[in-house]
Length: 403
Image (cartoon, rainbow, N blue to C red; front, side, top):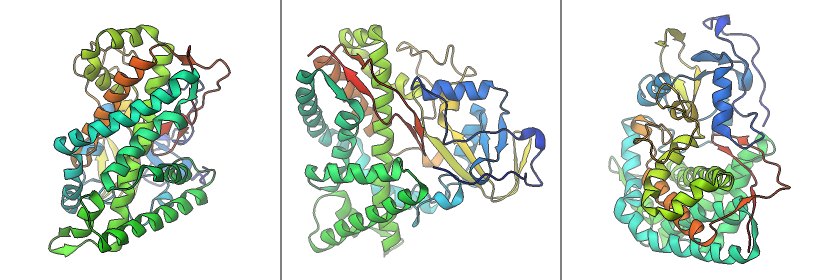
């Protein structure tokens, strides 16, 4: 996506803090997004800098500054979730783009679907779907991992949560691709509009025939005694599908790429399945790929830099999670690393409510895929690419193995 640059610096920006960087463009021909981000930070990027790209905004590269931005909603508002400002969805995606205290009132409406009990109930169906897909792929000796596997697991989880048939997943995958991987900004906004129409049609169905699913729960929900209005319902439905699908599919793909290149790590997971939970946590740290955006709510100071109300600031989770300030040899994948500190799921009141669900999905993938396809590699003809939106992703990952 191309957005105009803002070459002139705002009056409050020190020229020494200008650093040319486009959050939507990354030089990672090997598919390693986090390593590319570390290289950017190493190229004399200030701890907090102003870039003219995408109409101009701040970028934080220091782990402590990133955690501060994410943890202080009074100073750094979530009402903007990406740069530039006009690329944000309308209506806002609730509760992602709502600040406290209203944020928590809406967040609680979704927490039941993310509870440990709800995730345990979904576990058997997710495992069954993964098993079916892997069993179908294994005899073929190759697949395009993103389209053939990574996107199917999270979309199936979403459809299960909202009580919709699994047959809807192909339509939704194509629609979500227009939002997360658009060829131009207009395509993305058109995708949001079509997704809204689809979601609200499902809402009307549940109003007529309520059931035991998340959509029905939202239709029945009350906040401060009032039912949710149409824009809020639309925003919450959008969160349910996009927040889980885009990030989980991307994380699965980065993990699969790493395992395809590192047979010793594969072998250890196969021989010691008990370490899978620790491996999931280390992969989450090492493969962090979300760029979180906040709006400065009031004139303030951060890391000795003056910020003005209305400034936008991007906090890349990879730079807080893959940091030599916090981890020895941070680019290494070490399953024995002490419980790694990371911001892959964000921090503060907006920390990802689907974190437990994501961990469960990743663990199921590692267990079932390696059991059936223990040895695989990147196809020799593959050309890897990393694209970046709100989250980084590899659009295609061809894998091969002995059938």
